[in-house]
Length: 318
Image (tube, rainbow, N blue to C red; front, side, top):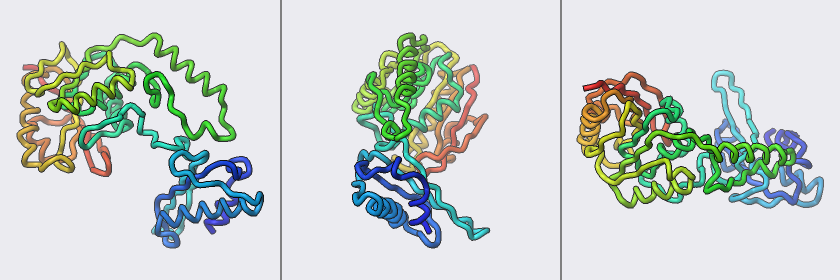
C-alpha cells in the first residue's frame, strides 16, 4: 500500500528526474511499519523503481546535500485502528533549519537557536529596554534577541545567505527570492538603535565562543560580553529584562550541587534587579525553589526532550 501510494503521490517526472539526488527520512510507526529505517527504505525503493520503469535510470542517494529531501511521517490512531502517512518536502534540504550557521562552537548543553528565538519572543522583549543574560554560555539567547530586534533574517551569516533545498525545487521563484533578499539588505542598511545587551560568563573559553558566534551572526557590535561572576554584575540602568538558561541537573552536574547557584542567582535578582522582569528556563522545579521567588507565569517548553518551564518573575523594587 505505501509503495504504490508513494509512486502515485505527485508528478515525480517533474519533482525527481533521475539526474536529481535524493534523501528520504521517516518518523513515527504503524503496526505494519514499526521501524522508521525500513519505512524510509520502502519510500526510496518505490521512487527508484518507478524511475527505472519510466526512464531506465534512477536517482543517487545523497544524505548530506540532496536535490530533493523527503520526509514521511506515520501515525496510528489506536481508537479507530486507522493509520495515515504524510509525505513532505524538506525545504532545508541539508542542515536542519534551527542551525543558523553562526555557531561554530558551543558550550555544554547548548540551547538550539530556534528555541532561543522562541523564548525571546515569549518574553515580550522588543528591543526597547536593556537585556541581560547572567549565564550567557555561547551567547545564543542574546544573539537571537539582537537579530530579531535588528530584523536580521535567520540563516544569513557574515552577510552571506545560506542555501536551501527549496532553491532546487522545480517551482522555485528565483525572482521573488532575490526581491526578498534585497528587502532584507535594505533593512540591514538602516538598523535601529538598541539598548544595552549584556552577557556574563565565567569560563573564558566559552566566552570566546560567544564573541565569535556574535561576530559571525553580525551582531557583535550590539552585545557586550564580560567574563566573571554574575554576583559582581551591576546591570545597566533599567528597568529591563533578564533571560537565563541555568544548568538544571539533567545534563550538567547533580541537582544538589546546583542549589547554591540558584540561591545566589535569586539573591542577585532581588538585590540588583529591582523593577526588572526575569525569565528563566527551568528543567527542575526543586532547583527553582532555591531562588526564593514566585513565578508570575509558567510556559511549558520542551528542550531537547526535557520537560521544562519558561518562568517569569517580577522583581520588586527595594
